[in-house]
Length: 103
Image 1 (cartoon, rainbow, N blue to C red):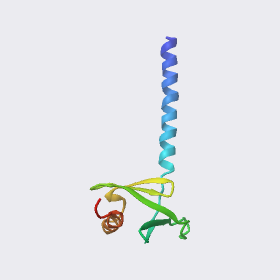
Image 2: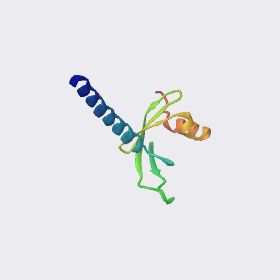
Image 3: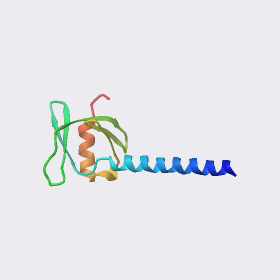
Image 4: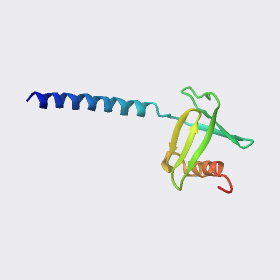
């Protein structure tokens, strides 16, 4: 009986830790509009902040350009974009910016 109680207690703690980690990872995901600019072969981006002003300029690097999914590094943050993450024309423009000839 005490082993079952101990097992239930450990499972409860593990479940609580999992829920906290899941909530934390979801809450730190960037939200909002990212404005990209292209200059001399590099991409840079700025997030629109809560009051409409633009944040600091960050380096943007595309390291995965699949048929549907786009993987970006925006400064130190990892960002995955699905086609439903942004309007269709914006998705096409981003794919054109990230595509490198001969790749």
